Length: 186
Ligand SMILES: Nc1ncnc2c1ncn2[C@@H]1O[C@H](COP(=O)(O)OP(=O)(O)O)[C@@H](O)[C@H]1O
Ligand SMILES: O=C(O)C1=C[C@@H](OP(=O)(O)O)[C@@H](O)[C@H](O)C1
Ligand SMILES: [Mg+2]
Image (tube, rainbow, N blue to C red; front, side, top):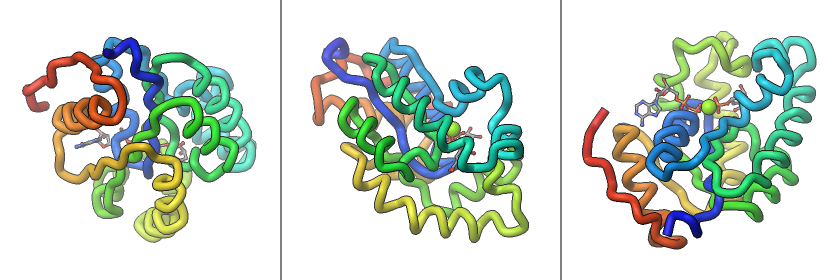
């Protein structure tokens, strides 16, 4: 039953669809959706780009660890994390111990296409964002796998289909969220 399903934490690279899928999944489950980047922005009163510019990546990562610790203690939420959240061992522990971790695994081409026009990701505001995405993927893919209870490839699947597949996986892994999959495409 859906009441028995613990919190669901989405991890994966930039552009994998963590924010998009997380919001839809929460709606389907009737749960609260939280995005750790939005939470950090609301706590700080500044956007992610500003935090990176003023405090560097190290400052952002400190804020991110505090956010992941706080949010992963909330019961029965759906949490979309930022792509670098798995870099810190303590974040991985928080996530793995406190909920069901889903790795949305997107190839670099897909990450590239989905992030190209969006200027809100400071790490990609460089002359060669593809190279950055490739390097990050090599470093982080083993960490996403280490922390994940469920791995879901995401390439050309509609968000709504992704959510239906995920609901089925959660059902077989855990405790049958009694939700009828939505057949509409968007
Ligand atoms: N399954 C999908 N199919 C097509 N577009 C998607 C899919 N998932 C996400 N997107 C689009 O890709 C972009 C990045 O998605 P987002 O959810 O912000 O990714 P993340 O939070 O993992 O960085 C958004 O414009 C979103 O609409
Ligand atoms: O991969 C990363 O290091 C980051 C991913 C971003 O979140 P999304 O994965 O939601 O884009 C955001 O946390 C920040 O720009 C850093
Ligand atoms: Mg996001």
